[in-house]
Image (cartoon, rainbow, N blue to C red; front, side, top):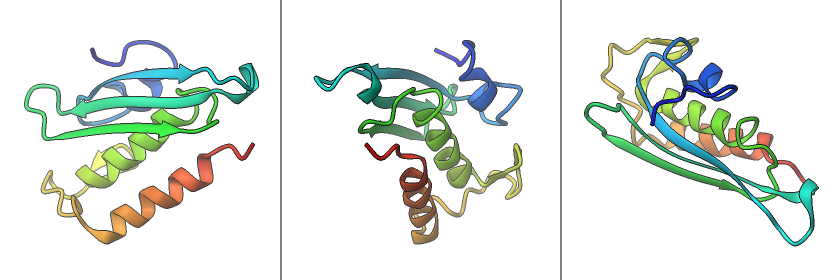
Length: 116
């Protein structure tokens, strides 16, 4: 279940992200109509020896590839120490449970959520 479909492959695919991750996106319908869909993503990585799983649901976020996948990418990047597509910490991932990474992820989620 690697990212091979556009546009997710451009965010977490093998040419865009240094860790092989797998995931599935989705858009949840709501009674409010097509302009008010929920954005979700579930994924894990690395594919060969998984060490982290993420599940995101962003209420009224809209397109998953435009909202949930970028948030997941940012979370994975913080976890593995990826900056500009390169692992800068040699794979040590010291930030796994740090409060700073958690705060950054929450900030990204808040900034990408679509207020409706």
